[in-house]
Image (cartoon, rainbow, N blue to C red; front, top):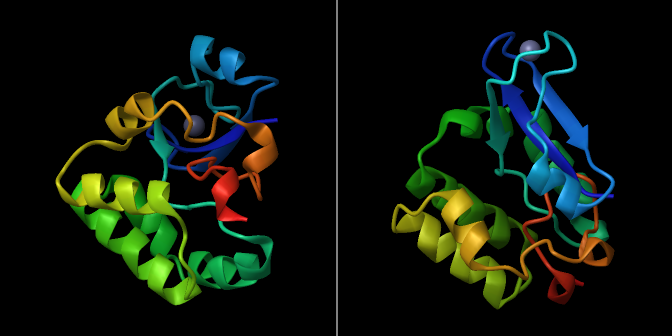
Length: 139
Ligand SMILES: [Zn+2]
């Protein structure tokens, strides 16, 4: 099932919403489970990577860097994703590079996702439950 990270702008908590299908996600208005606010910002900073690297990504997340990205502009997000890719030390695929390049040009994550329909479109390609930016070719 697809799930998405959000930052609640009301209570400032990070929340994860899970949907049965991507169709549900498209149709749904995200609601904070804690305060019922609908003022949520999608967090896309955490990119799904191969399972073997999940612990390293968790380490990065534990350092708090991910949380800072909730309010980051696309260029900052792109730079951070590029750093993560280098940290992983593997080729993360053409889609990853395209997303990074477009972020660095200042395109919003939403625009990139909507123009790249294959991104995260297949739940089978998601290697963790955090984002779905990456597709099958990550593995
Ligand atoms: Zn809230």
